[in-house]
Image (cartoon, rainbow, N blue to C red):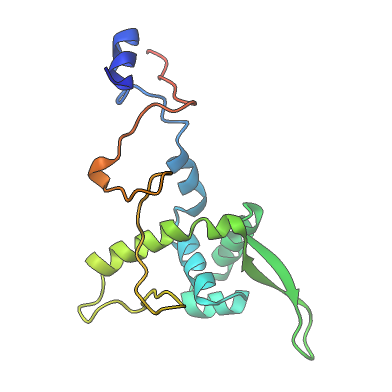
Amino acid sequence: MDAWTEILQDTGMDPRLDRDVSNCSIARTLEIVGEKWTILILREVWYGSSRFGDFERVLGCPRNLLAARLRMLVEEGILATETYKEPGSRSRPKYVITAKGIDLVPAVMGLLQWGDRYRADPEGPAVLARHRECGARVDVEIRCEQGHPVQAKDIESVPGPAFRMRSPK
């Protein structure tokens, strides 16, 4: 008997449909990075942009929205600011990726990989992700903690330590 069936038998409620979804890591993550401009800012950081003016120029994002997204990414610890000063100018912040931000690379690369496969221009992708050392294409792959490659069909979802059922109405 699997864990879902045990919960169903113990509570009489279907754990897949009657679970408390307010405790969802995906929903919490999307609160931070689930908006178009935020993901595009991260893309530009990985492409080498670091200054407000660079982001504004490349993205065409309204200044107030860009400032709010950059501030949120810094507050969340995904980006950090460092000060730079060009000769004859005042000091300004530049944005650098943190370890927490680097941990988002597989998610954004997954979006890129999907987009290259299903949404690219008829001529092909605009930017290619290559391994710096050997030049081979970079692909996102799911692996279990034992290092085995895992296909989507082989992923099993089970109740975790913070699993909760919704309160009956």
